[in-house]
Image (tube, helix red, strand yellow):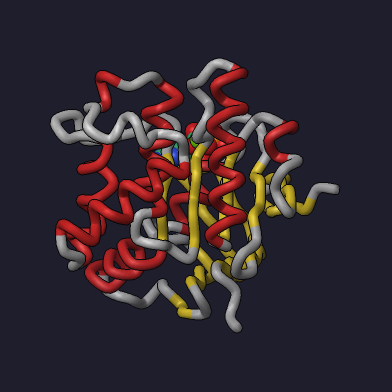
Length: 226
Ligand code: ADP
Ligand code: MG
């Protein structure tokens, strides 16, 4: 089976002032199906860039990004969007939930966009939220939830369409340590229960230790940590 994600010879540069900065250089990286990987690297080293490339939100300057064995660089924007919708789930540092909708609706909507009936979507949304300990918060709007609860809804939303690849960009970065550990625990449990491949950027080494693998960014390359 083709890996969930593969980067081959990927380069990414940005122009900054007079010169340019090379964030990724000839980077190779593979995540197998069902594997969870922590991305642990300092601020400014390219974690978000790597996640955006993996999620087809940005184009590499060199090399190729494969999702599920499929080369993506020559696909149309519509086709990239389709792959992203069907196969990739995102969790950001800030939840980006829709404020006017309830927790249940926030998790059901992506499934309805994909074609499920409201009844089916609500059933799965309820299951996911209950699994994350939010069964008693289904009809709350984001503003009526704590930071940790909001982030758990965002995790449920990212997994709502049963993606093959979950990408999380410092998902607990704005939470206090205790809430962060709780949310990360729920995320880890769900990743293992669903068998989704996951790439999770985090600064927290204790949390990273719960993943199958740990990688960092060094001189533009993706390097395996012990
Ligand atoms: P991290 O997520 O690890 O903090 P980023 O991927 O956001 O790192 O950024 C890596 C480097 O690339 C930083 O030096 C940042 O300033 C630069 N960078 C990121 N996006 C852009 C952009 N759109 N234009 C110019 N420079 C950028
Ligand atoms: Mg970042």
